[in-house]
Structure formats: C-alpha cells, structure tokens
Image (tube, rainbow, N blue to C red; front, side, top):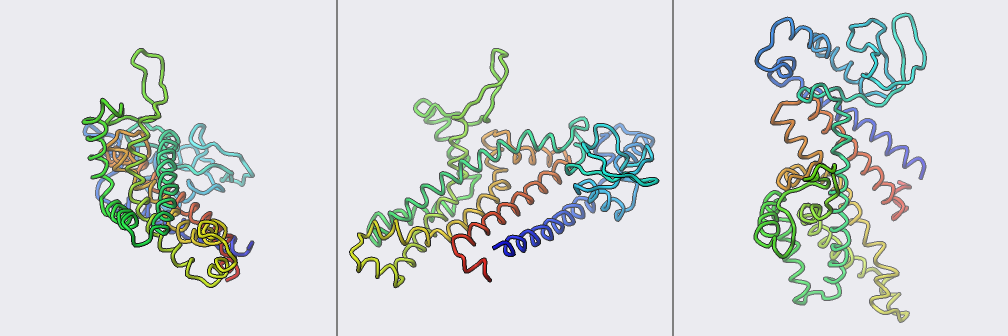
Length: 358
C-alpha cells in the first residue's frame, strides 16, 4: 500500500510540474504588455521600465520561467543584490533562511503567487485566501447534496427496478445531467429568488457574508447558500444516481450475493451488508472528479448568484486582465484537483485492495 501511495504522489508531482509549465507559457505568449496593463493609459516610458524591472518582465522568457518556478517552489534561491527581482525583500516573501553563499540566499517558504495588477499590488495568495473558503463551502455543500440524494435515489431505483418510480428517477437524473449549470442558475434564481420569494424568503443574489446595513460589520447569511448549492449539485446528483443504480444492479448479480440470499438474508439486509460497499467504488471515483471540477465549474454559478468565491474572482480578473490572479487561481484549482484525486485513489485502493497491489 505504501508503494502505491508513493507512486501516486510521484505522478502528482510530475502532473503539477506540467500544469505550472502550461500555465506560464499560456499567459506569457498572449499579446499585450503586462507592465502597460498595470499602469493603464497614462504610463510613461520610465514608469514602464521600472515596472518591468520590478516584476522581471525585462528578462527573457526562459529566465522568467525559472523565476516563476523559484517563486512557486518551497525551496528557493534569492539574490543578495537589492533591486533584483529575486531579492529577499521584506513583505514579499515569508521565508525561513537556511544558508547563504557569496551572492545567494537559500530559503524555505510558502509558494509565492505574485501580486495583483489591479488591486494595488495586493498579494494573489491573500486574494485566494479570502475567496477560496467560500468556494470550498459551496462545493462541499453541493457534493454532499449530490452524494446523499444520489446514493439514496440509486438504491430506490434498484428496489423499484423497471417500475414507474425507477423510470421517473432515471428521467429526472438524465435531465439534470443535460442542463448546463448556468441555465439552471438563472432559472432557480428567477423562480425561487424572485417569483416565489414571498414563500421561500430566498434572495436572487447574495454571498455567505453580507455587510450589515447599520454599519455593524458583516454577518453570515446561510440561506444564500441554498440555491447555488442545489444548482451546483444538480449535475453530479444525476451522475451519482445513474452510477449507483447501475453499479448496484451489477453487484447484485454476483454469485456471493445469490449465496447471501440463499442463506435467508432479506433483500434490504443483503444490500446494506454485502452489496452497498462494493457498489460505491465507481461512485467514489465519479464524486472525486466532480468535486474537483466544481472548484472550476462554480465560476458561472458564483457569478450569477453573486457568491463571493474564487470563481467570481476569476471572472472579475478576466474582465480586468489581472493575469497574476488568473494564473494563481488556475494553479490552486489544479493543485486541489490533483490532491483530491490522490486522496480518492487511496480510498479506492482501500475499498478494492486488488488495485493497490497492481
């Protein structure tokens, strides 16, 4: 099992390196001068030169790539010459010095995602730290709804196989998988937040924390989570329902299930004690992919509902060409996607020990 885990971690490191490379190249071969994006329309040649030197834009593409890797690496090397991009200045890096040579200091630090172009030089890590928890809460709520209801509806479909209830559940789950999230978001916001607002008391837009009208700071508004969580969970709910039904039917056709029935176990007890765990394997795999993709797929849902998460921040950054925030957000989402997949692979190996021995 240990070898299996280490192998997965090795693959993850290589994948993450590839993601970093693609992100850097993608956003550095785009037309436009990042220095001019930061300064706006009234920049001078001297100002452009200062910004380029400060952020390393005056260097070749290869040098910029190495500096980007150095920023992201926990173990990094920094120049002792003040004015160089990699100079270990106060406030830029939170680092622990390990050792120094004649012109270089080696440090251990958190990954540095650089600074926003449009938010007065605010660190991208701070922007992500403020918005990612809201997205995580939304994604966890949506996947919890999808997991609980999907498994339950899948079992109900099996219990009433080929009857009206089974066919109705299959119709609804197929419809849920087919409808795009942004369309569902618009319909739900209009119907439950506007037309039926008098009965639901739900808002069309709103985030987890809202500013008090009387100046008493912010307060938590949990009801604003209901509609975006349901909308974001509709598509994975349909997938989980279908997978659970098909997987459970396949498991119930196995010989050991027939043996359990022959020993006198009831159908419900056979499912609970013997079939349920084995039928969850494909469901767990699907949930992992959906949960990770939700961090990216929440972009439209967050924007429509006004949910102040990472997805909405990405849309705002795209509108203002704030490249560091876009790059940092994509990198964080990709990292979370990889970590979640490793975690699920380990769970999958635990559910099916044959996999970890391969």
